[in-house]
Image 1 (tube, rainbow, N blue to C red):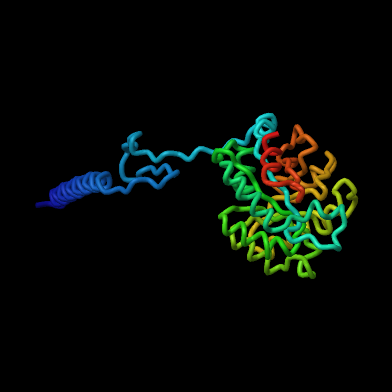
Image 2: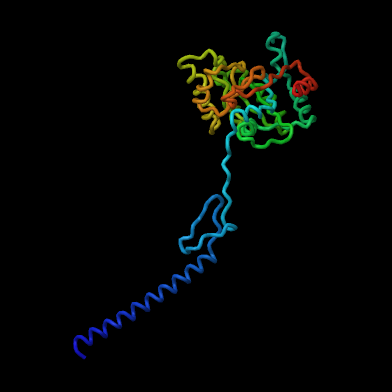
Length: 304
């Protein structure tokens, strides 16, 4: 054959070879898509996976459910949820002859504390954590029937030596609002005890540095009384602290932006004052418990 004939033959052979390779590649691609549709694992929860080997979209039945985002309630909704009693105790120890008449109502003997807690349980009330309460107020997260929150202020030593064993024996959670100026001093909690309280499942929260009322703060007071105690407690227990209690339960609207800026999710006052209509989470109410109250007196007050 001549040069043109040889070139035509070579061209035809090259075309047949190319067509064969394209056909083979197409067959392999179809086989791969089929295998991928049969063996693809289900999508992980919350992730919408799209197959890169098939043009077919996953069926609605196979799509993983999306986790709904929690929607914070409006201030009005949060105000309406301020129905859970939060009890506020202070010193848990025996009264001594040196205790004056003003101090005695805030000194609860251990036996009285245990009777109070047993009476709550006997009345069908169930202690919940402070975080559960805040979730309920903010998001409407369900709580068990007849919830109650237990809290202890100031960081006196008897809260560890006397209250903690009672709480553990009755399997009840509580929140401890700590003022940090007293840590490691005689008759007050040590830093190690704060750490043990946290490890025992109790919530650790802030109660300022030295118990001055927030209504008196100016200048650097906000950092000293709000920010530094939070940072110190977080260093002690190794995780965030986002709850705060006002000394004496006293607050004003000027203080709320500072409390919020310090990183607190919620803050607690006392029962006598209504919640702030715009920032209810920063003015949640507590009920001051007096050692003059017997079990039935306490239950009656909770019904009021």
